[in-house]
Amino acid sequence: MRSKGYFPLIVLGILTLLAAHTAAASAATATPSARGYAHPELLAETDWLVEHLNDADLSIVDLRSQAAYTAGHIPGAIRLDGTKLDDPDTAYVPKPQDFAALMGSLGIGDNIRVVAYDDQGGLWATRLWWALDYYGHTKATVLNGGWNKWTRESRRTAREVLTARQVIFTPKVNENVICAVDYVKANLKRPGVVIIDARSQAEYNGMDVRAKRGGHIPGAINIDWQRNLTADDLKTFKPAAELLKMYEAAGITRDKKILTYCQTGVRAAHALFTLRLLGYETVRNYDGSWAEWGNSTDLPIEK
Image (tube, rainbow, N blue to C red; front, side, top):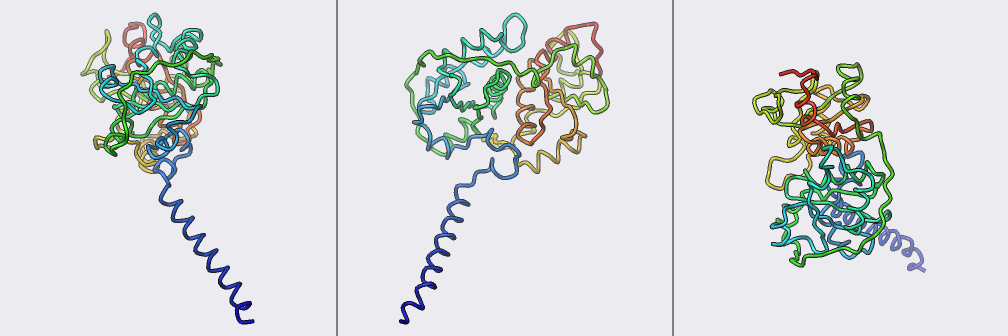
């Protein structure tokens, strides 16, 4: 009879222990990307990737140099030259048919999840993420810390040079994440619109000139893209609270319409990715950037 009395207590104790164990396990597997970001699903952590390396619907894309890739890469990764993410004639993102052919050659089809990485804090990985987002592919993520973090953690690497099976990629243009020069001109210093210059301060001030003219688009706010990352050699994304404090202090709030630019739209894509991570939903990349604006002598500039 006494055992009947203790039985509920025993069950309760077991359930309590199980709950505690589950909570501890959840805490242990909680990733930095899940702590404060509005869209943590845009970042892949190394722990997650280790568990999913062999997923049939996963494509891992290495955007480092050919030499770096050949020396060693994440198992199963296929290399992409980041410069192919620009149209050689327009300096904008490739045309739909060209981008579809490029993605298809990498084995990236409509239902494939993409994890992109590099060794520069996501500079080129976010460019691929943005280009995919522009063409309606919403299953792309960026590996937080990229190759730097992967190797620091002594993760497994491979040297086999891979080629992908050709598949079909269907481009579906999303005009809401890009803008051209006329759109920027129409929104100069307009209330409710903020232009972010993701270049270095020297480029912004006109001391480092990489076009016919130096300086910046009138009214643009300079937030160097590297300020989105930790200062260590891992170059992971800073915590959400720290990033929000930086952007909001500059008047870049989530109720604004935001345009990003740099020299060629690559650093601007990194800035756009960071803002999307934080929950900024209305952000466009001026893909022509300073290479177009600075070389057009009829457009206004500031220094």
